[in-house]
Length: 260
Image 1: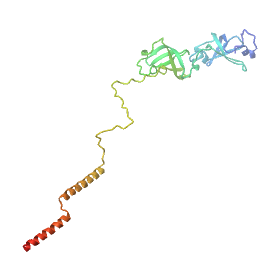
Image 2: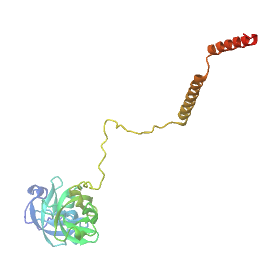
Image 3: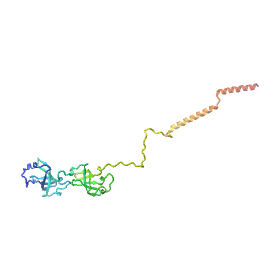
Image 4: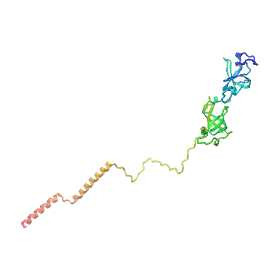
């Protein structure tokens, strides 16, 4: 694979031992395939740049980025010393890519364009993330331009990742401070504080069941009858006085009949 034309006289099985991960090199694209491109970096064995290592964003086809004969700058990504294989990358070490992102991470992005449904931000991975209008605030946001404008640099949180489709969903509202508690309205009634001691209430009419009411009326009727009987006894003559009076009347009648 491109061993001919090398400027170094290194045995093929020892090529990898002369390289180091992260090493920068200049190379020429020798062959382009669906999954990447083989690059001659002048060590006697071509290295492979996988399609996922050609740019920060998603690349559908290697031919969209390079073609045979292109001169490219690459970095050594991995070395397989057993199989004498070299993996290369066209992305500089330390550069953030879609594979480095994690849901929940906080990143800084620059607004690149606005749409009616949200804004797109460059977050440094070679592919813009999308900030939906509903993620711009805790309340209702009618239009994206009410919150951001092109060129603004803002902090956002990653709330969704689809690495296969190269999609990143962002949010601003997750980083906003919590909404303040609503102030008490002056027209609002003063809350009633319940006392530990029961309040003394006057003129409270106790509930009386029908049965208890009938029982009370019966007792009152008996009390009235007993009262009438007491009054009647005041005018009645005791039995002893009645007998004595009868005797006196009998004697008086007897004397009168005898002419005494």
